[in-house]
Length: 325
Image (cartoon, rainbow, N blue to C red; front, side, top):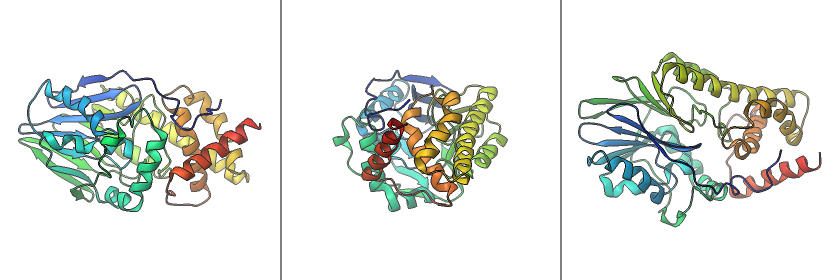
């Protein structure tokens, strides 16, 4: 099956919002495969984990928070840098925002490719970037860390940590040690495709093993429903590992056989479609996923920068090849 319209331009149907209470301090804002937002409410303020695509979209999260607390929203934490997750950060400035926090690796990615990423993703996701004119520009962290840090919301300890590369080189998790609840960003997905266009596929399984060893009771993935039991958390980790490993192995096999990108796409579909063809944003992600997996299999260690022009050139090239089959 191929999708003729570029990326998610045909995805115009509004998604159902879910607002789930994980504990007295933690909530998940999810929407049927759209990027999730995490919320932590401490003694003296709140933290947002991932900030939606636009300031207008952020108002949906703010309205849910304001139903239960009037505490200032002091912190926005970026689990990594993709425009669809971070450009809404400015929407929290009127709510008491003091710091936008990210790993130094994430900051470096913004310097290197933030503008190209922004231009690229706005073209890919028209529904999520409704009211894009409300975005004032790139979202820049005001506080960075290396490795890990602890932030206190009154007496509530919030751990912020890099456990390895996977979805990007800057991936960051947030967790509450006292409650064993984790917000993983796109290192983990549930019932949704993994986007790997900026990934380190060879590193990702080990990073998932590092996460699994932390034995969280609840985990909010980057996309998909909140995982509310230890069994569901392990299942989400296993699902993500299977997706990433199947993609990586398919590309490795194809390159070893001398296939070009178009042939690699067809080869990868044979393994991926039966297992993952039904999940959220699969058709959107797969061309970008295969492109990165092909590059990595050919020895291109660091992901190439996606531009709006490269997006369309790759997409339409793969679609044309598929149509010629």
